[in-house]
Length: 407
Ligand SMILES: Cc1cc2nc3c(=O)[nH]c(=O)nc-3n(C[C@H](O)[C@H](O)[C@H](O)COP(=O)(O)OP(=O)(O)OC[C@H]3O[C@@H](n4cnc5c(N)ncnc54)[C@H](O)[C@@H]3O)c2cc1C
Image 1 (cartoon, helix red, strand yellow):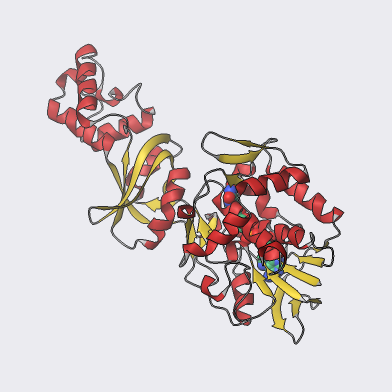
Image 2 (cartoon, rainbow, N blue to C red):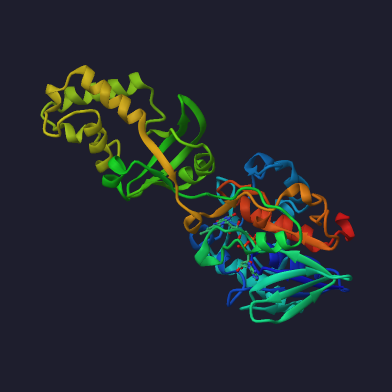
């Protein structure tokens, strides 16, 4: 069987290796960029967080999160890591459950995939931008921007999503699927920085802090998250901001972020600590109230937002003023103005409508012989290796072409 795969990213390469496990298949992998797996090299800040030991369906989103269950449970984490180990990749698991290559280099993941594809005889065509697909009487035809045509008895669309444009992200996969009668849900960037009113964050650019972060609207908490945040000149970045960005992108106007920089300490404990400091260091300037507790610029910002003058001595501060500092340090609010766009997002939320595909095979219910995998589908995961696991699981399942052990 001739298998045509459009998209040489994580899921497309996995689909190719999966299809090649059946010796009756030949695989042609079409990639618009000059090399396969370009985005993979940028994942995990160049370290590639290739999966997570704590995969649960609750980490996945879309119109039908249940859709992802079969693929994730069939080609589960243990199986995925065993597969990569057979290709020669050694990995380490961090305490958080995130898995990285032992080399700490994303290129190791790409290397083992590329070497296996070559060894197993995949025909890889790079700089091949597919602009049109046609369902023929006996299979599928793909037409490139430069006029070449490629034929497959079966077609797998693994074009990824719109996130990370410089790394190959585009809406092309959705357009190709639309040519075959499929529809796409609303698309929006996810796992990206959250934009806020710049008034307070600009001066904090580059500051990292541990916090309990709540995304709120109309007094209600939409979602919260615990861990590292990083201030940028336009808002908030870092893993916790990424985690909340999906909800922020869809939550509409009137949202705010509330950051608790003292999540281990209650209000009264913190107040006691500040009162003790006032007693021990009466001549200290208010700007140093949080010295030893927080990053210095952040400490000064809290003092300023609490309405204190930097040069006031601690002995001159009232209990009310200290309490104002406690309140500001425990609930530092920022008005949300939006999220950064697809260019800086790690993943696309939304995609090809899952109800038009069979979750057990990833075959189209409209076009027999057409399969999809990866981010082009309306399945997106949280930050932490969940998206690549979806790419591996769905890629492996799509590569079975509705036959074999998963049929
Ligand atoms: C900066 C960054 C960091 C990330 N870090 C992580 C991480 O550490 N862990 C994690 O789990 N996830 C991470 N992600 C998300 C993860 O990389 C993606 O979810 C995953 O790569 C999706 O796999 P895919 O195969 O569906 O799409 P992609 O990997 O994007 O591959 C799609 C491929 O199809 C090609 N293509 C598209 N259209 C066409 C066409 N018409 N013709 C031919 N070729 C085409 C593209 O050039 C691309 O190579 C990160 C994403 C980014 C942007």
